[in-house]
Length: 58
Image (cartoon, rainbow, N blue to C red; front, side, top):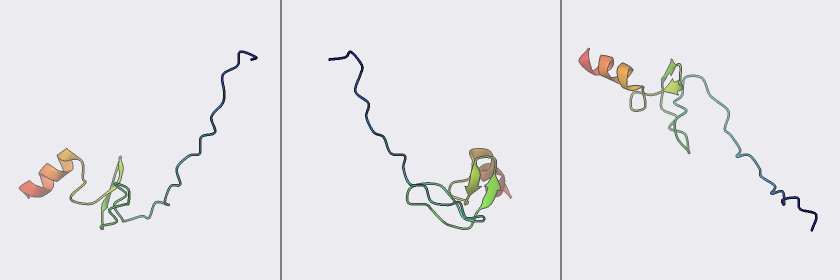
């Protein structure tokens, strides 16, 4: 034994390309029509809480 720890081969997950205008939440992706937020493209169901409150109140 050389005292070095064994290295484990780790493969990154395969990511789907981001499609502008489609909700990119979840795996598999939601893909409903959405708006662009700082967190990415989100539909009404996955919009950040502040945005969801303003759309319900209107």
